Length: 282
Ligand code: NAP
Image (cartoon, rainbow, N blue to C red; front, side, top):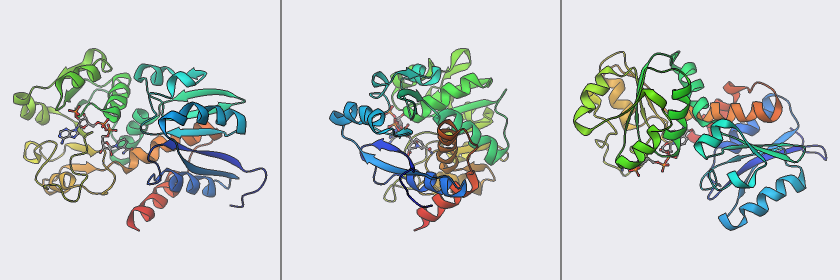
């Protein structure tokens, strides 16, 4: 890739953002697609967000990914918002169409793409348990609700946030009390960890989002954590012959959807995944 006067610029805004894998993943995509585009990271403090958004228009930046803490606060600064981003009040991707800025949210549908890719699971008609009710859980619950699942059960440390998230599930939503967890896990086709439990090297490795011994062979689990690539929970589940996947695919597929929104082309996901894995292994 040769940067020239006609290179198209995209990037990510967040704070902090220097640790982000997105530049590695998306520059690999542009290289593989032989496109004269470049993707960089803009560390943007909250008080500079409005200036940064004006800057997209002023400089003709083609689009931006949006990460924490700007996913909600960017919404009123845009010209248009997709239905999903409006429902979630969270934008993770902005498209600049000749100065008209439209916000999208590709997280939840990126998660469903990942499940289809990694496990071959068609989610329609399935029973799903989501642990957590933060930003990632909310986008996944919203996409699950649109995808025709049979049940979306939600468990969270803070009950109020679980009920807020369940509003995104529609009629198939169900709040899970502590004493119902073994029954709900045993009946689930898919269990998702959308909490950071298992992310830290220093954490007690027997602190699991859900006890692995509640699962049986043949069930599917996804841990949204992608660093480490394999969490203690995933390892314990695999020991029980439960199919367990990590969060890297969701990261790749939400970026692939952003790539498509910006360029109109299908993203080269294999090259994106390889670049991310090489970077994590470094
Ligand atoms: P968030 O908005 O901060 O939400 C965190 C959730 O985890 C909340 O429901 C919180 O419960 C719960 N939680 C936090 N610490 C906990 C603990 N010690 N015990 C029990 N519950 C706990 O975070 P997020 O953005 O949704 O991210 C959640 C996880 O997904 C993180 O590991 C993140 O790295 C990962 N993630 C992955 C991707 C991907 O592309 N793979 C994308 C986004 C996030 P309360 O409501 O009680 O606070």
